[in-house]
Structure formats: structure tokens, C-alpha cells
Amino acid sequence: GPGGPARSTDAGVTWTPAGGLPAMAPGCCSALIVASPSDDARLYVVVRVAATPSDEGQIYRSDDGGATWVAVARLPAVPGIGRLLPDPHVRDRVHVLLDPNNAASTLLRSDDGGQTFRDVAVPGGAGPSFSVDGASGDVCVTNAIGLLCASSAGGPWRAIDTDLPGTSTDELRIARGQPGYVAALPGRSKAFGGGPWQSMQGGSYGFQGVGITSVGDDGRFLGVSGSQLVDSLDGGLSW
Image (cartoon, rainbow, N blue to C red):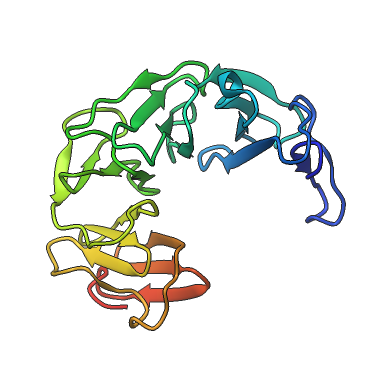
């Protein structure tokens, strides 16, 4: 809202300024707000101050649903923050992708709730996008090699796919269920080990947003591509 992020406790009817966040003049800043899937009361905000490069990438954290905020890590000054994704199971673990439009983009990891971050080494570089699987917590990235995934706790990176479609990969989403990974890019999906990339909605729309999640353990997945909800009952082979 004008002046900075605001908080509502009545389903958006009324709003009040979120305490502890900096005042923001209109047009000066952008803020990325992310909820933690492992703790309903924890929120993160990344504030980028366009007029002051040294202040870009300041992370704030709330542990009371946005009532109060504290400044945690200040990220390096880069042209853009791609995504900030908390781990779905480990409360204090969070990953951040820096400068996604640069071939030398960097993936960072924190294990102390965003207080400190360290670089995550990815074969071939972090690439333009990353996603965290909501079921397993696996971290996946795209780069010149293809689609790579690893445990959020660290460990070897696995080349899941080396044949990404010729489209923008800055909207990668991935889910792991039964029988395995299903990944989604804008309007396309792939069940790994089950054939080529295919349209999620019959090829009729050019949606730019995408989401995907596994449902149960019987091979069912739900996907969102723009404004359309699509359903797969065969592990992502068809929608």
C-alpha cells in the first residue's frame, strides 16, 4: 500500500501499516512478501529500494503474522531478486535466487531464518529460475545443463532433464509425488520418464503464470496456468 506494506486482519476489508518495516515513498521501492509453509505465523519481506542500490535486497521477517517485523539479512545489491522460498519442512531454512536475468545468477541458502546466507554451488550456475518442491523440499534450478534438483539439506545435484522447451524458464514450478517429478513452465508440463514436454491446457492459451502440486500418493497432480486450473490423474502424463 502507499507508504509501505500493510496488514489486514479482516479478510482485506481494512488495512493498517505493518509495524517495523521502512516507510516507502510511491514508486521508490518494491516488496516481495512470502509466507512460510512450515509456520503459519512466519512471513518474509524483501524490500528493494530502487534509488539506493546499497539498500536493495533487505530482508525483514515477522514471526507473529505480520504484526511486527525485524530486519534480518541484507542481500548483495543486484538488479533483481528472483524468488525467496522458505523450506516446507525446516522452519529456519530459506533459499533466495539473486539476479535471475543474469547468466551468473546466484542461489543462496539460510539455515537461521534469514539472519545469514551462504552461496549454494550449482553445476553450470543457478540459471534464471528455481523452485522448491512442497512435498519433499527438494530445490530445483534451470540452467544451460537443463533442470537440476538436490535435497534442500545439500548433497549432489541430479540432472532431471536436459531438454527444456524453447521458452522462458523464469516461471519454473516443480512437484514430486507418485510416480515421480512433474515440472511446469508457462503452459507446459513434463512427467519425467514419461515422454516430452506437453501443453497443460490444450495449447489454446498463452498463460505466463504457472503452479503445480501433488495431491495424495496416487499420481494425481493439480496445476494452475494463468487463470486456468488443470488436473492430471496419471502422474502428469496428461491433463
